[in-house]
Length: 251
Image (cartoon, rainbow, N blue to C red):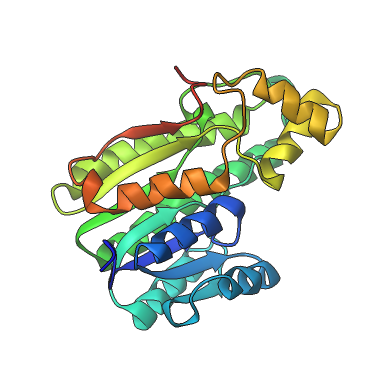
């Protein structure tokens, strides 16, 4: 039997690159997976890739407390109490100096990335079994930062504070950790790179790879594998940790 057989996982941003890769990794380890996402079409496509009898999903906006509560309830109705929660939904914003950064964009990034994760924790934790794992997707820029990314970096640093608070509040029953992916080979990252570099997608990606000690982008599957590890017994003594999966960028 696989390590997570019979366990249940709840993933926000479940149709995106990292969310879906994590769902695959958790399902391959035996878990039932429940996805929440804003986009019905993308959600349908993601679920079509997963074992039909062990996957389900719902459209939900993580900034809407009622929607989050309903999504958690639906997941529990389908697969029972939760063992793994991956708070993954997030947005980037724009690149601009702080003095020129649009306030509405800053507020939206904070709402999705920080409030959304808070709401996931608020409603999912009471439905988690003892021994469960709550994983929060931060970013390499939750450990570092760069000019022009005030909203994104601020939100991703805030998630570390939320994680550390939760890790102490929920110990010893539930483990809580953040992951900090570096540049990952997906459309989300490539859009950021084109905006930052102002060149073609290929040239912008190449410019970013010069900043990565391992000299390449991560694959979504590599990030998903770390999520599955943190979900399992092999990470049983890990809580309150910031887990860098960034090719050495934060070293």
